[in-house]
Length: 181
Image (cartoon, rainbow, N blue to C red):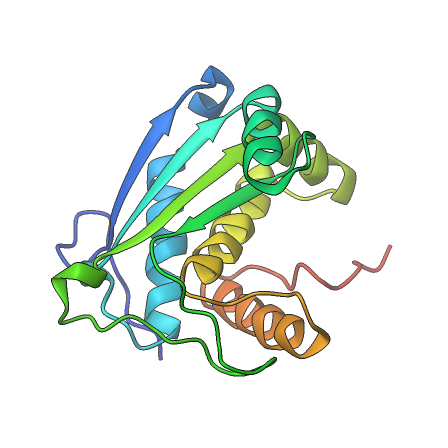
């Protein structure tokens, strides 16, 4: 059973949010991000209070610039991640090198950026609440910060399986299944 972590619980991860796009103000991003990061860490048997994540809540223009600078793709995307450390697995589909919660140097997991326009458009196209889609993207991004990736089929299967498991703990549907109409 996944432990319940309340918004005021000192067991929560530290999630710092810098909001550049006022469109994010309609969403309680702080609470949503805290739940998503905490659930991700708990699912991996990591104590949330030992870790920190920073999130930039921006618009499509800003994320397109960042995507161009860091990935050579000057187009908007939903989420970008910058891990503080390379935790990639040694083999495709393998387990990443998770941080040691007792190591203060490992506390900062890294940074995420979310683009409101892209997130809102994707949520609308999928018929999902924006909060659910953003929660999924924060879980996805946090897994990237922890060394998970989806570059190979084996890596994608591992990462997507974890995402589904984590989202289930938050009472959210599998984002990879097409809903029946």
